[in-house]
Length: 332
Ligand code: SF4
Ligand code: MG
Image (cartoon, rainbow, N blue to C red):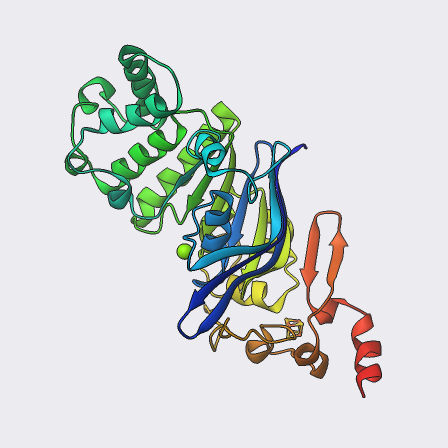
């Protein structure tokens, strides 16, 4: 499958009074046409910062893309002019956030808000824009679309509001949709409906989706591939199958043990003890070492190499790398 987006060695830092936070530390991945890639990790792991970098929404200052490239249609999004980025943002690459209320303007009808996006990006009459808005409301499964267009956000339930936000994000037929914790604010039944909606929309439109979440449970339903982030790095990436059935990184295993599974009769849920390291001064070695039940001496001393377990499965862990023992011997 063709890549639609390629992120290479992305580093993002934030200046604070306490020093420089290294929020993203060399992230590389690609997004294939028509797939859903999930980026999973605990809060503060850099997953939202990664997605905001793609949209070039990192507030600068204090934030900065310090290194790396983000290739979209032969353009490096980290380098192009803001005027050019504005044409891409919301049109070719669109983003939705966790809380639908913050994305919606309470004083405008949902029709006007959905239409705003197209009018901004395309030369289109109001009548045509309205037609498109109606089409979008139908696409996201809002009944009586015609009447609903004239209503205000508060007249919709939380789940319906998230559907409207999705309609707004899709109105310009983007090629990439980035969804940052799109179901976290919703209750479980509604969550499932919204995730089904993503799949349905993808089948109909072919949009490529980056789904950002802390919840591996969410990913099980929709992701084709999964990238697990920890302390600003992708520590394991693979197909959904490989990540769920053959996880190799102790952090991935920890995440899997801490979510309820319907498909496996798991025992008790075990939270991962400890907390992620301080990213002012990230450890030289594996950032998970302090929490890892398998940590060896080499883990503190050097960051593991990326090891390919199959054409679709990579992991950064010394346990998978036969060079660990040699390196350790050389250090002594
Ligand atoms: Fe654990 Fe070492 Fe693997 Fe890090 S590199 S996850 S500390 S075994
Ligand atoms: Mg976040």
